[in-house]
Image 1: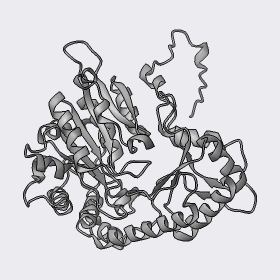
Image 2: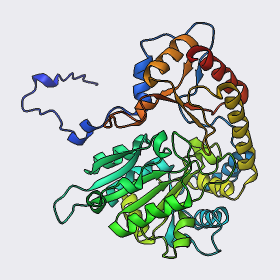
Image 3: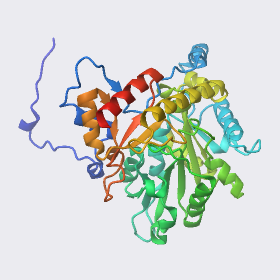
Image 4: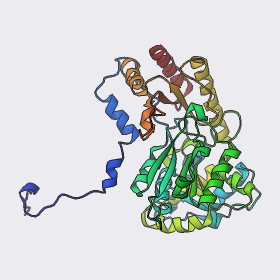
Length: 414
């Protein structure tokens, strides 16, 4: 016999509402939730069709070796994957890094200097949980990050209890934080510095000299430099310099440095959730201990597919050429308008529209085009806000869709 019981909690005695971590109140809504809230009350035009250039989700078809490898490895779905990945995965990543960044063979030790990630997002977030530690002098640790930024940097810093310090990356400083403007007192209490190259959203590439200066600051002041290189394989004229190459050239190993990369952009495989972190072996030895408690581990068939993708460059070259052609389309539509420039890396346009939120709303209402207001990519603590004037446009669809979206954008805003 079933007995149905309905409980009304406000009638029960001694029931206390749960308390959440108060640091959560210091976070705004994630950018895409904010965008959904902005557009929800407004209907797009009838009959045009919606074109979504708001999120950086590659629409290129993933290479066939992905599905083929997963199918071939189906017998291992019932096995728990090891938290530090398979030897084949670590070896593939180490050798790819050496080929890509011209490192001597054997420079990157697979057993000590490479760990898998379930995409770079979880790795970037969890870094702060380990890197931010209470200070002996009682001062609050700081986490540095560019602004505009990937919102995960901010969330990680805030939830780790650090002071999040956004560094304005504007047209005046080449869309990279001004390292010379950092005060010694701030650097002394810095625990972690997030940098992204090619930058999201501006597409600029940090030079070897810039990265070497950032790494020098990290080593001199005792903080961790975390380089987000997830757009490193999408470039226009020249492959971006990487942090591993800079550290190797400095001749002091990889101490104080980790780099993160993934197959989401490189191989148009965002759903695979496969990335890696490489670099400082002492940090990674501690990181694997932390990740054993909380981090998702990629299933073995997917890890085998990742090995195949890291070992293949043909599909990456083809995808890169497609992005170049879409940048060509953008240049034909936008040259001389809205501050357009060819981004050296990545697949975003960073367009100066005067008021990013108003422009995004207008594009949705009048043209059925979804873009992301630049101010949603900043913490909102600078005056003026370095993203407020901009929208970010993701060139992720095929050329025909991108061209149509840009045509509507120009007709609406110019």
